[in-house]
Amino acid sequence: MPSPHPHIAIIGGGAAGLMAAAAIQESNPQAQVTLIERNASLGKKVVISGGGRCNVTTGILDVRDVLTRYPRGGKFLSSAMHRFPPEMVMGWFTEHGVALKTEDDLRVFPVSDNGNDIVVVFENLFRMATSNVRTLLGKHVTGITKTTEGFSIAIKNEDPLLVDRVILTTGGQAYRQTGSTGDGYAFAESLGHHLTSLAPSLSSFFTKESWPKELTGLSFPRATISAPAVKHANYTGPFLCTHRGISGPAVFALSGLVAFEPWDAQHPLLVEIDFFPDEIVSDLEKRLVELCAAHTKKTVKTVLGFLVPKALADVICTEVHVTEDLHAAEMGKKNMAACVHWMKHAPLHIIGRGAGDEFVTAGGVDTTEVDPRTMESRICSGLFFAGELLNVDGFTGGFNLQASWATGRAAGEAASVTELS
Image (cartoon, rainbow, N blue to C red; front, side, top):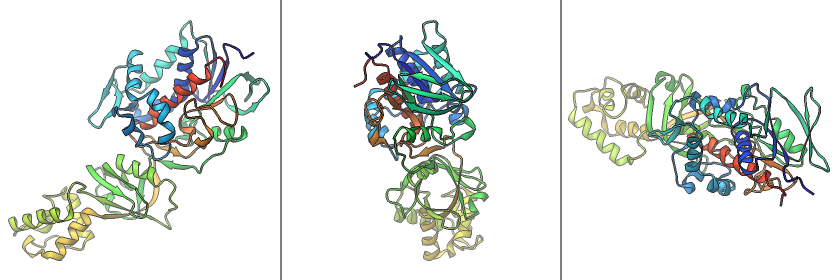
């Protein structure tokens, strides 16, 4: 007979693992939970996300819209996301004492701007006198074996831990300094699962061209960045220039869309920036013609400065080979067309990646081998997955934490039931 109060091990104390433990505590308070975390504290990556402010979730409330923000895994997430959508996530944290705010770009943060407040919610839950959640910190799981009764978990310098069920929430390979070293992939494979290809996502770009360095720190609130050679690889949003290339939300999103494209310093990836995504070429050209006609004695650089920041006007003149001190009256149709084309298709060649605000791993455990309603393995009964370990990744803006909360909750609720289906 299965135990009415199963002993469940959760391996990984990040967002998905924390929410899975909380869900078990709520669904089956008598179930025993052992939460094993490699770091000396829980939720290390949660705390540093969003620059330390913790972008808890997204303020987008239409779940169908939210699901479009995942380059991989949107369909798989549908069930879990509908059962624990952003609105419910916000409500859950508010009920547990964390005041939240939704910023203009629809990112949701604690009012305190302190990611620690999110982790403290779970620490307090697990410290309650009635809690059956035991946390093992600073412990390194080295292997998991399926037994006739459940699972045997090997822990470095410890006796094996025998449990009824296991929830794997070890995260991906990003931010290795937080303990996300990819061990979970090896555990999944040892229990019969397959992995998709892995690649970094939500990264900034290093460029072959040096002009972004000249604009370091300059941000653009709305532009479309695309990779013309990759189908559907375009994203409209904010970005900024850095001393090595480009960064910001639109860049992070595009990096997710091209995560598996084969490119490197020897074989760069061409991307294009449209600085006027809401204006067609002919309208932009008309505006430039009118500006030149109204300011015939001003230089081309000065006139371009009426359309774009002055530092970018400098770059345009250099890139399209227009003499800076050429007067607007002398610009001519050819030069005008060249400037407009550059502003709509500014080319950059990507030769490397840098870290982003969230920086997640694209790819992971093949979701066809996981039940999307329960997060239970279709291959190994009693084994559950949640969070970034799965082949699920979202754009920047709270979508990755939202996926972790939703899948963690689904796994916790399913694993806590008396008898598995």
